[in-house]
Length: 99
Image 1 (tube, rainbow, N blue to C red):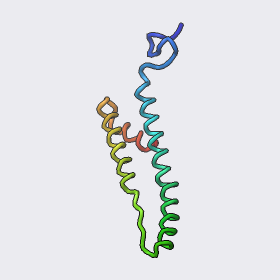
Image 2: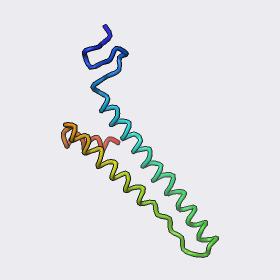
Image 3: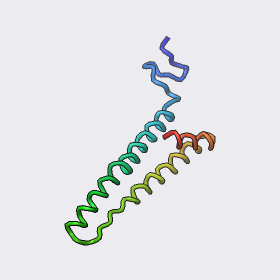
Image 4: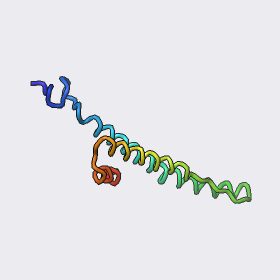
């Protein structure tokens, strides 16, 4: 039996778990993006600021807070999508903390 008719295609792929896997991919990408912002960019920003200040003999400030704002917007859209799709608010909130 190939599993067709029980939520699987003839190739064995789930037809009813696609939104769950899409959600997992979204949160995985969001986590990677957030780690890149906080670990890589913030570290490089400090080095670049110090170097620029020493070369320019002036105060230099690099600000990447706008990148974090897109993370909040993406999270809000994902949460709304989950709850609009019928997921319980508490369950959708747990997805946020799992990422």
